[in-house]
Length: 404
Ligand code: NI
Image (cartoon, rainbow, N blue to C red):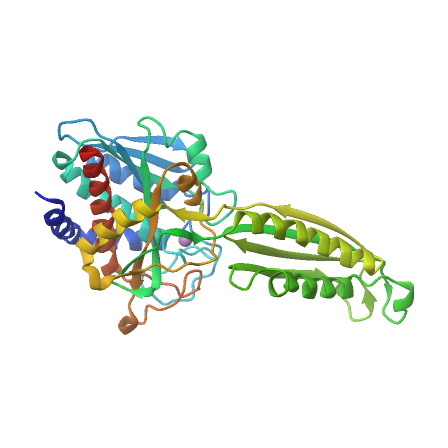
């Protein structure tokens, strides 16, 4: 069977398991777990893999699961890795869905429940297609994507890219901005380096009516926040994507007291390596400089987070071609370039690959809320499409490896 003829059959096979995909996704949605605490989710994945008879490795990265499906077609083959993240977010779900989260303050608001269900579905479909490929498909069920340092690096350090050695990696992300039936691909950077800073300002506290005998940490903090904004507006090229956001300011707790201390927390997002380093240095200089000018002191804690996720051009072409076979060229769009962070970046630093977007929105059904929203939801009709796209991409990569 030619590759072009294979994709529709993969879609049929994926549609055949649509009911279970939905049931799995909803079960996971009802039982969300935070990063590195995905013990029940991990057990669920292991149970499913065991039922299918797919060998897997645990523990890896605390709650991760690494499985391998070996092709039975003759010939040497390469290894392709498919990845799904499994963790939820510390968000109180506000939907009234029958399958809403049963855990107070924890919610699958980024679709990782769907990613996990899709990878389980891909495992089943690929198992049924074993005779069509040589080489192996490795499945990485990854813990903790949402919180630095993340689970991807831990899985890599514990050998997920070895035995057999992985030649390429692919993953997808639910995207409610795209309607179900749509896939998005983009070569180059698709998610940003996400670094974090905490600035502790120390002034001198005292009576609100005697500012002259104090060093007001609130005013120093306010000045610092305004100055930090000029790093983008006045120091960064307008055609260079970058963000500096202050997400928290804490100081004082009374009307009539000047606090001695203030704390500012924020994040810096960049694609460019040099700009990343420059902004890190400038956040420090601005914070320390403003404090010194205002007779205070600033201590800056700067943490480098996930690196930018860069899609390999040739792997993106391969993934896009597979996607076109699944949904048709009219339904394949250019993927968004966003400044979110994504630890799939660590896989892409080591092997070429592509991280693509699965449309999971459905305006007619009111499924429009963005990722990390308390009413985020996934259109379950997108799940088989995700399965077929993952399988088609993996098989195309292995077939190309054979031809090479
Ligand atoms: Ni996510």
